[in-house]
Length: 124
Image 1 (tube, rainbow, N blue to C red):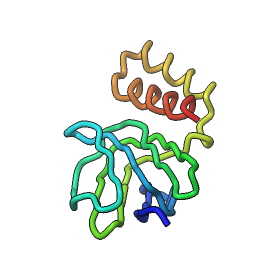
Image 2 (image 1 turned 90 degrees about the vertical axis):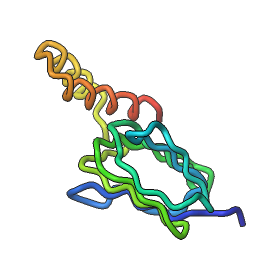
Image 3 (image 1 turned 180 degrees about the vertical axis):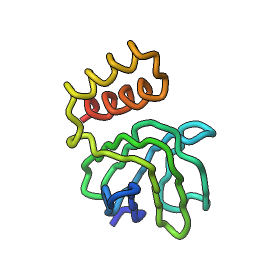
Image 4 (image 1 turned 60 degrees about the vertical axis):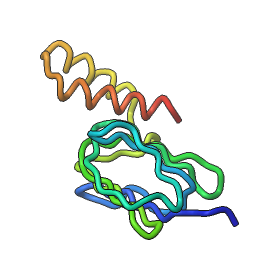
């Protein structure tokens, strides 16, 4: 059996995904980070960006994450997000409309959120 870590991706309103993985890539305030089994303990602040989870079964889970914290110890990774959506939950047309609206309103935060949602949705 390959080395695994337990991953829990939790948003403020629900558990988004939980399971075994071999690799998780997320964006933090210090830059992108990859976490594999046996990684040194860490605690960081999540930036808005896609999170990629390589599952133990060989699949890939992608989520759009907007803010929060990442914590790893004892082969348990917690991603505690303010907002998180799995890529297959994202309505691409709605995200495109939100991006156009944010650009016309000159709303940098909304624009970034829409861009992250689109990147996650199209990475499926």
